[in-house]
Amino acid sequence: MSDVLVSFVVPAYNEEALIESCLIAITGEISRTRCRAEIIVVNNGSTDATRRIASSIPNVKVIDEPQRGLVQARKAGYFVSKGEFIANIDADTMLPEGWLRTALAEFSDHPDLVALSGPCIHYDLSKGAQIIAAGFYRGAYIAHLLSRFLAGRGSVMQGGNFIVSRIALETAGGFNPEFRFYGEDAELARRLNKVGVVKFTFALRALSSGRRFSGEGLFKVLLRYCANYLWTHLFKHPFSSTWLDFRHAPDACSSLKRASSILRQLKSRGAVPVRQNFAIAKFGVVRRSERW
Image 1: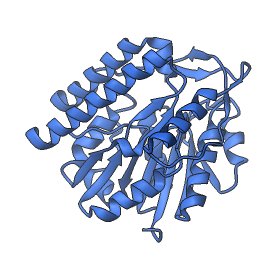
Image 2: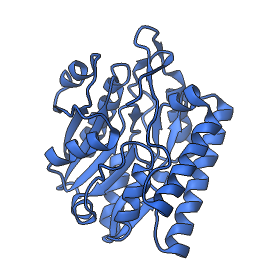
Image 3: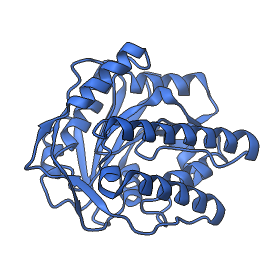
């Protein structure tokens, strides 16, 4: 499927500390796979250097979406994208080597597949918190299987790490502006499941910041995710209508050594092919700012 065009859409709000590492990882994947691709950063009203940094990276297109909200940003990127597949990647997420090749192979091997998603490895959490978060994703995978094979609906997706067919997304009605943050992935997965197969696989791992877990509390966030998943499927609207914004302070930087360590572990386990010298950025302490 190297002849298809893949559109990477990256929503970004005040992500000057992490946006460069995210885009470098995507660019590296495109180069290694030699796939036709475009990268679209949606600047969602940033007041820091996010737009400037993203614009400085070759072959990255930056558009502005002043209306705050994750779904609003995804929707804006989707409208200007041209790809047959749209990869939705959060700005605090880094793709390991092999991500794009895995995704394209899945769509090539399974014609009925409409969306593919995988878990996130939160490299900046403590070891114990990482284990708990990993358990949560395994629980999500079980929920995915139960939804698919017992209830016949309600598949699971990880919002910041998924790729979807444009035709399927259009058929499903696109992104729902009534959802802004919580429950948006569950709601979209529910509609896509009526079009074709929505698959959640551990072969599509991505590295992502656990700053929300650190800022709000691990169990509090996990419970909120579960509540919004259930509310979305039962009542067709999210349980939480507002959310807090967590970002890394740009004036307190240190290297992401844990990310390199995790990438090496993935390589040794044979989970996904990854480069040991993966390009990673610097980040500082997590801070909470205003609500989106």
